[in-house]
Image (cartoon, helix red, strand yellow):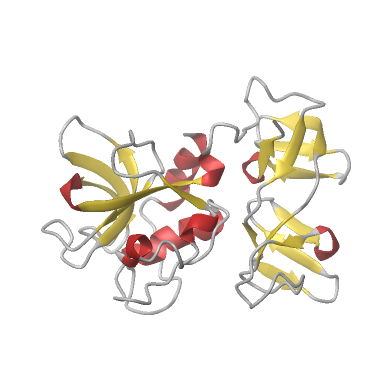
Length: 244
C-alpha cells in the first residue's frame, strides 16, 4: 500500500511519453511504473501493438519475470495492474493501476490517457478486464522503514529485478532510483538475458540484483531508508525484502 501511495503521489497529474511515439499513452505510464517502481522493464506489444498483448503474450513477453499473474477472481489491491481487452470501455484496450473500489463495476484506476493525456484517477468499468498482474515486490514480505518487524540486525536481500538507469563507465558505476543512487557495477549480478545472455555486461535497461543477505545497521523512518552494514551505504527500503 505504501509503495502504491508513493507511485500515486509522484505521478498523478504528470505526463509520460517514454518512447517518444504516439504521445502520452497508457502504455507509457505503466511501463514507467514497471521500470521505476516494480523492478521491471518495458513490455512491448509486438503482436497487435495494443496493450492487450500484456496478457495474450504473457508467457513470452517478460512480464512474468517481475509480475505475478493473479487472475480475474482475486481481490484487487492498490497498485495491481489491470489490462482491458478491446471493449466498450477501451476500444483499443487499456492498462492502468487499481486505486480503489466504490462498490460497483465503476472502479477507480490510476492511469494515463483515460479521458485526459495525463495521469488521472478515473472510474472505469471492470467488465472488459482480461488480465490482472501484481508486482512481485508488492508481496507481503516487502518492507518499509516503519515495518514493526524490521529492526537493526534484520537480514534483508535485494529485489531480483532492479533496472540500470544510468551508467558511469569511467567509475564503473550504475544508477538505480529504487536503490537510491549509484552503486559499483562490480557488486551487481545481471538477472535478465534481454541482450542475449546473463553475461554481466550491463547497459541502460539491463536488470540486475545484488546477491547475498545483508544486515540492517540503522533505520531512517523519515527517509524510508536503511543502512546496510556490509555495503557501507544507505538503501531505499523499496529495493529490499526481508530474508525469510
